[in-house]
Length: 383
Image 1 (spheres, rainbow, N blue to C red):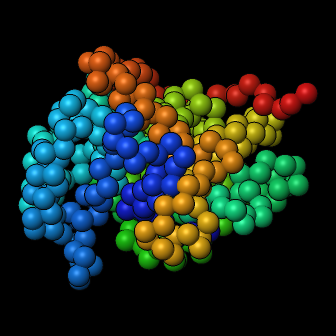
Image 2 (cartoon, rainbow, N blue to C red; image 1 turned 180 degrees about the vertical axis):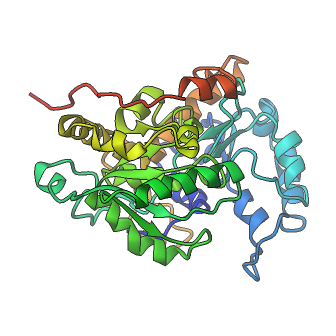
């Protein structure tokens, strides 16, 4: 287990991208440019006091803008082949001191990674990618947390678990959580591990291992629809139970997609839980062991693609080290790179990016997912 939070997204990507075998130091050969500036963290946390703020470091964005203005490769396509590694949601308040102008105007054609995107905007320049989970593959790993083997599946002796609190900054989401935890408390097969809304990371890490003992992990929406818990659950081999369509089903177009999301999860309409019309635990306890097994197998196929493998620890001790390194399989960073290359090809040709793949209003999405969905994945067994 590693201590990660949403701001870890920049480092998880940057420390891999600078070591990627696809990197070139010759801009004439490059078709994609990563802007190496952690804009979200700089605009949200004071580097000296570690206190929260909503402004970027004075003069930093001005210097970046001046550099890119003179950089012929940025001007070539007006930034359409440049990427900003944004570690927040699309509509998280943009920081001042020039960062808001940089995002809105100067880099209007750039691609921004984020942990939640607006699924109703055609050709969205913000593309959601997975949160950095508490698990990262590394050279010294001994046991894969998503292993679906019968021996490890037998250790999942808890039906459902919830790791979290009731409180969020979104009143509607708080009501869903309140109703969900009430139903959880009423069931002997549901276990709620309570943590505060602003929990200390190491406390969360202590609890995360419970996901490997559970069949279902409850993932209600938080301040935003997106939840890091979804990826902690997937990588732990625990079936995520989703209560809001925008938490998973219209997000992460490169890494998951809607049908795979349905394969690995259970969709519960949170509004019906909130109103008392639906007992979600009756749904979960009614799912057969065969369907659970198939979903666990589907999780095992997906999990490597949504975690960010870590380079050798020794190399990370030197911030200037850029020794080439790639994992032995396609992980979340490789999938992100593939998506960035594909989107850039469309952007420089003024073509549609196809993101999102299904363009519907928020109301249409909500209506379509206002029913329980327990999709049975096709068998993934070999032979």
